[in-house]
Image: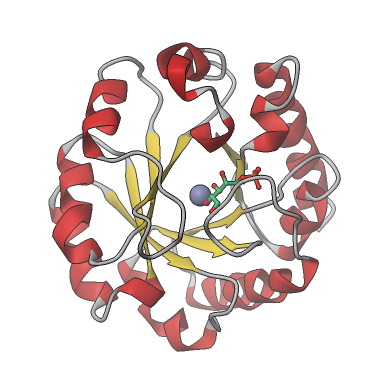
Length: 226
Ligand code: DX5
Ligand code: ZN
């Protein structure tokens, strides 16, 4: 199994929102992507930030943005994040009736396209859509809040996706999000994930950059042993 070097994406959901630019700078040299959780208080009960904050933050750092849209009606809003310079824009399968069409729109707006699968959604109906996507985000919690406990059973979806990606020789990152920390990242990597979102484990650490490096080292080790 050939898995590319792991991506570590700190989630600013766990950062201090009053000092966002500073919090991003604390990880920009150590991290690969910055994970930006957009929640609309409809698709999920929580509410976070939207386009104006992403636009301002985009001007404050060079790190690629991995935007995770937990919103209704992503066909209306997602392309705006691509236009704002997001590297990858991920929307939820549960919120979109034509994921392939939106993936096309995102790619033509210059972004990578990501499909997210929430805790209670099966992966199988979406496997055949994966050639239209650059990232597949598999939630390892129920989307909506940081700081939840990792659900190891959800790694079965990662295994199924990894098998499908390998069999089809697809160029696709398999990303996990939720409860990723030093004690869970190795099992996620061994299951076939190669991109890792971590909020609490990074911004809850005394040294966020060091926490990122440590997580990457653990993921590399587990992937090498897989
Ligand atoms: C939750 C978000 C996650 C969140 C993860 O719905 O999608 O990105 O920030 O937080 P931790 O790493 O604390 O579980
Ligand atoms: Zn997220």
